[in-house]
Image 1 (cartoon, rainbow, N blue to C red):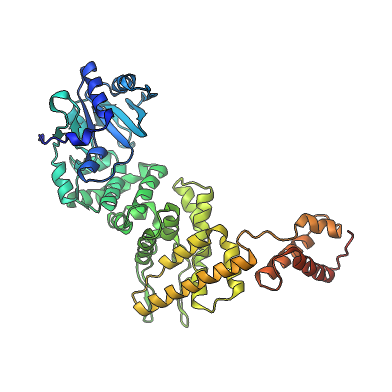
Image 2 (spheres, one colour):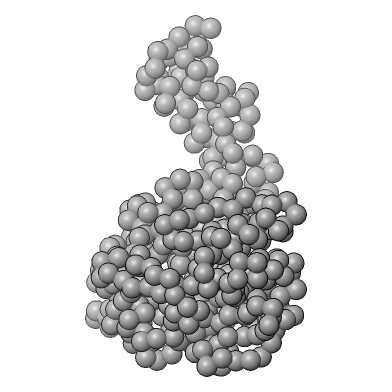
Length: 476
């Protein structure tokens, strides 16, 4: 069904008029389609990319558009996919020929044939992404809406244009995209579509880790990430993608003693941290901060439920999880692992008397990430007891103030021992040996414990005392 409503005001960018002119010269019809149209109708700021479909060659249209633009921008051609891209006014514009697709069971890469606009809209993932605005001179700005996508936008519904089982089986990444859009837009996935995701969940195994993580990052970056993760859990996808998280689900009871449901607690922490940071890696840290609790959970008659060492175990699990999903194994992975390993340290400090030495060690271990660690730990406060909630947050304020005071005085954030290993070797005429490590460690511990100041003279005097006990003689 074609909606004859016109939205010329959406097409005020110069690129649309030039594309329309290029299409006339090539004698093809062209349309703006997908996310740009959806976001215009939702009054959202569109991301800097536009999709244009030509009923003909998208590559020819891109090259013609480039020839009509003042600086004739370079056209990137992707012959395998029949698409082309150029950049104009800091916007990426992708051109594709209208097409119809068919799929093989073991691949999400379609067999592509030339098609009509109707064929092209049929292959779109959701009705709200199948909306198109005409660039034809005769009906410039006319909305083409064959699946009542505008109605679904108004009702905040995610629905597939065709049978959802076929849509999701053909390209299983669409299951992740449905949940991502529901999370980003605060929409509801239509009931039959949601059931189809559950029925087709095993198909996600043909999707690469990189593609899955791209969608997970977008879900994590949404305003309330728990919306997406609860849908992933409800449909069974989460158990396939992140079994470390679903292992936290449930509450066990032994002899009348229970523990909290660490899965739902984790989602609360992620939502809390989303209020305070846009950093997706800090959000990943919140998502994974308790994954070590499932493998370390034990019941003791006297102590009840314990999770001893869960931070260390969880930190080690991060690397394996990143490897499995083909996530970056660089400083981003190391950051998340460090946050997980240190995730309980400030909490312990906030519950006890805050000593200078404990704060020094926290600053030393967290380094430049100490602020992020504090943000994570404050998000970890999910108690519903108003008195406890206030008490914990007040205690964290004390810890934060102590960090500032100790750092100003002792400068341990980027701690470098005042005396290097090379200097120790020279002073005592030593070759590489365990004594050098013993002295360096002793100096570091003395500074962190507050036994000596973090300066050369104090460290030198302390080193001499310890060296004497080791039987070392100054030769310098």
